[in-house]
Length: 235
Image (tube, rainbow, N blue to C red; front, side, top):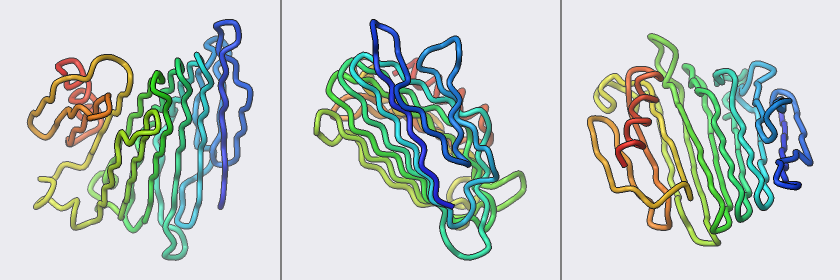
């Protein structure tokens, strides 16, 4: 399955207007009627499966505020063959805009092979927040293989270029001490760069071109989220 979804937000008279909203199953975008700029992302089918190629593009014009929130976890399942599934998200944010991409958890099931790619192109005065919650297998299950790539540029300059590879060996107790949830929170342009913070199985790292990246490894998603929030408060 190949699917492409897109949101374009513009500011008109100080109010955010969605100029373009295109869903494509299994990616369904539902705008909130009472809150301009808020869009719910719904997986309308069992996806991604092995071989699926999904892409979501988010564009915010000058002064626009776009917030995309997931409403349910994504269950990454193996397909009938060995092909890898792929979900790519791309953000373009103009000066004065705010983009928040806050999907729900992504659960990597046994035998699944998945690639998650996030790319962002920000103008110097744009603000961005991206949250990611990776769950390595269902309860009592070994995870499949996962590769993630995050590449963000700000004002034409590299801001973050990070890659992660996870498989059954990487997720073993010898490497992750049995912890199965990896959470991250990227924030750019919200305030002055914070100081670095390190804790047990978590860290907050200021980025050289501005912004910060918080990362936490925990036994469950609730604990991981609390660790991220604590890092952001202390940074």
